[in-house]
Image 1 (tube, protein in one colour):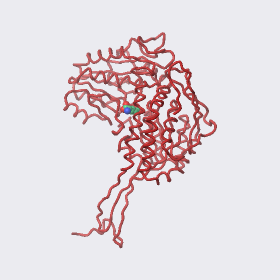
Image 2: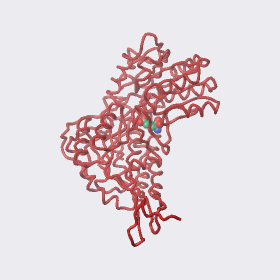
Image 3: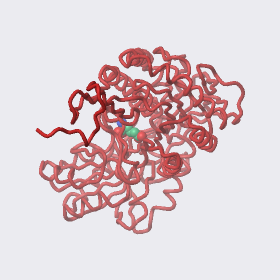
Image 4: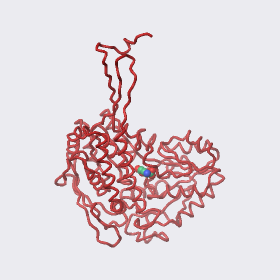
Length: 521
Ligand code: UN1
């Protein structure tokens, strides 16, 4: 990975990026040109991107279609050797990719290193999976007949991802899709093109044949129309999408019209329940990390802390103090969080601050809310706030279930706090917001934790740990507005990128008919 550096004040390289189809950069910029800037210092241009259009997307799908059957014929253990090498290439470039991550989306460097490690772990996991991809042998109801199942690749996968985890989350799709023998068209987030491009180059360096991994940089509308055209032309067999619930609905409807079931990983309003039997300090730590880490811009970020009335005031006071003193600012430094990912998110977060905070709420956590500027400063801010998209942390207490904030994902550094009396009430509040991605409970009582696990509607449940920070080899995904029930990661994702083929093999030498020739014993 060519070095770009990210030390404030240093002149930094700007990358020139275009889509890659069949192993070659595409000429021109049919969708226009776009600059990707550093959200911690918006004067720093990270990349200039030549955007593709509908035809770019379709031609990438065509290239993938052409390359796929040869790739599928490469034995799976050999395909997984390519992934093994790709993992080593990513590992060798870990710091450079992490620096780019910090520069293009403003993720604190320590978290960036963690995100890159997640790609390495994913490659390691699927390297071995390529030697398994097990099928089954199944007894037949007839003599002289064998039944088998095989996993077969779906074909061409179109992967469209968000920029909050611009390299780890795509790798959750790309790596298993490739090991399973699919070809891929990858569309990175608009505001993280350099990272998408870097990830694809590093994976290709493992030895992927041309056309097996294509990258399209395009705006949202062109991508959607391109996907529609490619589905219409029968060039896409599986869509993987991580992003907002609103866009996920559109993609789901489009795929449904083509009889496809996509893999959708959408938003969350993740609850964290603190019971009267919790270690409050531990819960505060978990709430601080998952509520404000990554500036609240994870799909697993804490939405609402639901706190038992006996510990509510203590929890709120301790969380408020922790937030007051947390270092915030320049993501190259050791901070709790850096800037918003992009102007789009900064604007929408400002809208939420305006629309969702009501007079009966009490707002604490910082003496101020909104963007951190010289006029609206934060004491102890790390760096120069006016250069980037930095926001005050906000805690909203006195939240009620009927308040829109209770059921709206804000994707910013804002945590709601509610109080509850009975366990049933806590469960209702943990389930009532309409999402179902991640949920946490803090309690020292195992029975209470098990009861919560049983009754909470969430794809991922944490006990005495925060709502964020899922490990890369467990199923990842949510229910209700958080997705369509699909799961990524670990062996579970293999069901997204392969289909079952059943085989009957008859060596009786005469026609045997199922359901009709079963001999009585
Ligand atoms: C996301 O925000 O889209 O569990 C994914 C976590 C991370 C992944 C988040 N490992 O917080």
